[in-house]
Every structure is written in C-alpha cells, then in structure tokens.
Image (tube, rainbow, N blue to C red; front, side, top):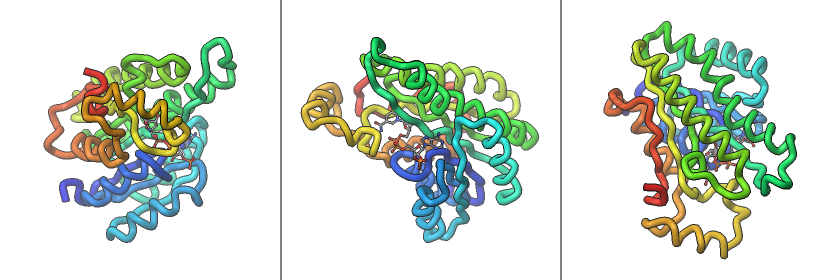
Length: 246
Ligand code: NAP
C-alpha cells in the first residue's frame, strides 16, 4: 500500500488509460476523485474503486472550462480535505491533414489536452504548495516527441504539455512537488480502436516489443511516479512505448 490514504484526482477516468490509472492508484491505497464529462460515464470506475475498499467520487466537468474546473476543485477539496496527486490525463484527437484542419479542430484538441492541464494544475498547485508536497503527472504522448502527419493539433498539444511539465517542475521543486510527463506509444483503448488492422500492422513494425501497449502499462508508470521511490524524479518526459521512440 505505497499510496495509503493519499488523495488523488485523475481526469479522463471513465475509460482507457485514465480508468487504469485511477484503479492502480486505488489498489495502492489512494482515494480518487474520478473526472470525466459526465457522472454516468465515470460511475463504473467509481464502483470498481469502492469494491477495492477505497473512497471514490464521480466529478462531471469539462476540463476545457476553466471556471467549472475551479469550482470542481473546491467541491473535491470539500470531499477529500486534501490533494496529494493530480493526473492530467483527459485527452481527445481530431486527426486530419493540416490543409483540412479547421480552427475548431485545433481549438478542441488544444483546449482539452493542454489548456485542460493548466486549468487543473493552477488551483491544485495552490494546495500542494501549502502542503509542501505533491505529485503532478501529465499524460503526453510519443507524438509530442516526434510529431505525426495528420496530427498537427494533437502533437502541438502534447509537445506543449511537455514544456508545461518542465516549467512546473522547476517552479515547484523547492516545495517538494514533482511534475513529470508520461508519453504513451500506441495503447489499446477507444482512442486507437478506429485504426485499421493494416495501420496497426504498420505501427507494430515500429515497436521493438512488437505489441500495442495496455492501459495498465501506462498506469504502472504513473503509480511508480506517485510512489516514494520516485521522489528524486522531476521534469521528465518518460516514453512508455515498447521502444518505439529511443
Ligand atoms: P479514451 O479512451 O478516448 O479516453 C479519454 C478520456 O478523457 C475519457 O475518460 C473521456 O471522458 C475523457 N475526456 C475527454 N475529453 C474530456 C473533457 N473535455 N473533459 C473531461 N474529460 C474528458 O483515451 P485514452 O486512449 O485512454 O487516452 C488517455 C490519454 O492518453 C489522452 O490524453 C491521450 O491523448 C493519451 N494518449 C493515448 C494514447 C493511445 O494510444 N491510446 C497514446 C498516447 C497518449 P468522457 O468521454 O467520459 O467525458
């Protein structure tokens, strides 16, 4: 129980990577506020955490809405009394070549993936600073490291998240708060479900470990970064990608 009685917020906890992270942190002893756009979508994660004997709360908020996030942080604090861990995981794609990309495609991805992390980190960091401890984990992507045709908006959001992570790490290090980014490769979730089998085969030729990642591969790294064993790691962008980017 390396995270016994820690209080965590995980955004995008209704499925995929965020759900796996919420469950991992709970299995390690944390109570978790589970964020998604609707309380219904995140209820199964909440129920699974309660079945592990931990506390969990559904939090319905759009991470792109700054005012709503500030209010959600107040509500969460009233429930959990403190926050030790923030995982900014909520993310979306609107893939298309630049020539066809609309401003709405750009804004939707940047507002959720990058601005969403800003909206959560600002109010939560005030609490962490007072406590003089805390862990912030931002879920970026290998696409933020190497780019990808058809994903200019997504790559920009994920590269931005890495710059954000390094700046936050420097800003809060003196208060014993660490901030790291995890960069998943291709992970088997709803986000990648739409890829054709042919494309998946091509992707696998670029993955030395020759398999798609699982949500739990990412959750295990997040759990480690939240643990006492990772107290001297900050400002890093850690690829969890089967060796795709090295
Ligand atoms: P997913 O299965 O599509 O799940 C996305 C999660 O984000 C859902 O819980 C969704 O909740 C939530 N979400 C989306 N927009 C939101 C918003 N505006 N406000 C609040 N919650 C929102 O995606 P995933 O594959 O697990 O990806 C999780 C993270 O990992 C994302 O940041 C993604 O970019 C990153 N990532 C994924 C891969 C991959 O291969 N899958 C690779 C690299 C990085 P609701 O829809 O229920 O509201």
